[in-house]
Each structure stands twice: as C-alpha cells, then as structure tokens.
Amino acid sequence: MRSLFRCSFLILLMAAAAPAANNEELWRQAAEYYDAGQYRPAIENYQRLLERQFDNAQLYYNLGNAYFKAGELGHAIWSFRKALRLDPGFKQARTNLEYARSFNTDQVSIERRGFILDIWDFLSGLLSSNGYLIILSLAWWVAAALVIYKLIRLESPSWLYYLLIVPLVIIIFASASAVRRVNDDRLTRWGVILRESADIREGPGVEFNRLEVGHEGLEFKILSDRENSYLIELGNGLKGWVDKEAVLEI
Image 1 (cartoon, helix red, strand yellow):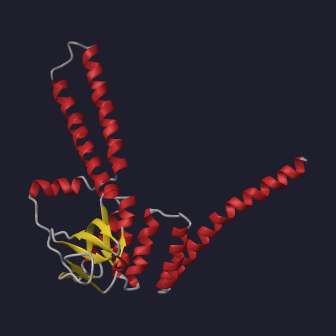
Image 2 (cartoon, rainbow, N blue to C red):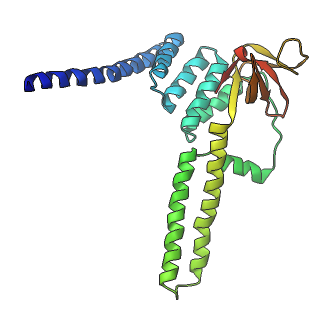
Image 3 (cartoon, rainbow, N blue to C red):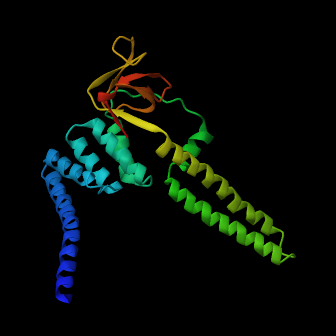
C-alpha cells in the first residue's frame, strides 16, 4: 500500500511539473525564434503562454518587441501597455512604448495642464496601486510611532511636530496616487486601433458622419459600447464611435 501511495504521489508530482517544464520550453523557443528573426512563431509561442495564464510584465514586454518587429504596431503598443499595467516601473517597457508611439500616424496633441500637474502625472504614475498602498502603510506606521512617542514623552522636542509633517504628506500623496492608479488601471477602459485605418463617426454605425480617421496604434479611452461599436475619447477630447472589430481593448 505504501509503495502504491509513493507511486501515485510521484505521478502527480510529475504531472504538475510537466506544464511548468513545457512553459519553460515555449519561452526558450520563443526567444530563439525572436533572435533568428522569426517573429511570427515567437508571437505564437508567447500567445500560447498567455492562454495558459502564464502572464507577467516580462512576457508582455517580449511579446511587444516581437509584434513591433513583425510590423504590428497596434499589438505592440497593446503589449507594452499590458506590461506597464502589471509593472509601472518597468523602464524598458515604457521606453519601447514611447518609441512605438513615435511610429503612429496620428500624433494626437494632448493639452498641457501646467507644470505642477505634469509633475503630479509623472510621480503618480511611477508605481502600481499596490506599490503606493505599501508606501501608505509604511508612512502611516511612522506617523503612528511619532504620535505615540509624543504621548509618552510629553516633553519631547518641538521639532517632532515638524518631523510628523513628512509622513503625513506622504500619506496624502500615496493615497491620491493609489486612487489614480486604480482609476486608470482598473476602472478606466483603454483601447488601441489594430487596423491600418478606422473611421471615427458621430454615432454607432456607418450611416453616421465621419469625424476623424484613426490609424493603427491610436490609443484612447473607451467610454461605453453599443452593439458593434465603442464610444471613445481621444487625448485631445474628441469623442466618437469606432467599429469594435478595429479595436483591441487594453
């Protein structure tokens, strides 16, 4: 009986290890295909890994590079943005995303909001919501420790009040940044055009007037959807409807 149990345990262990080994093989083959300039097979391998729920920032980054080399700009931008959603601090993914965006025909001008707000946009986009929550937690404990110390030592130095300002400012900043990241990453829907071109119309159908023509790689917010169309908003504030088949939701 004990021998039978050991045999069954080994079979289960091998069965569990097999998918992991297979994933590693797919990853290795994808890298080899990419190095050999065979980008389509590399893409297919990375997609198979995604189908197995083997998704992480590095995988999307590699997939984005393969898509870009294959000339699929829309898919490349989608992949880099997925990588940054999982790891906002992934500098190489952000660099490659900006480089891919430079090939987009539609250079939508975004209205500048001012120096202070631009700094806020930069700082609040450095980490994920979880990263800001960790900072918030640490700052809260530091503030609590300072308050407890003040209560215990009634004759503590006056500079302690000024020192308390630092964690309080960090708490406010981290809270606001976490809310923004949750809104951008989880509550706001984003999309990118995959076709060479797609009409942006006044309403959800070809019978409506065309407002603009979007090209492959154009990114936007998705406000709502109806049947076969998305209501979108561009970075310059223009709103219109675009065919769902031309869009990949990020």
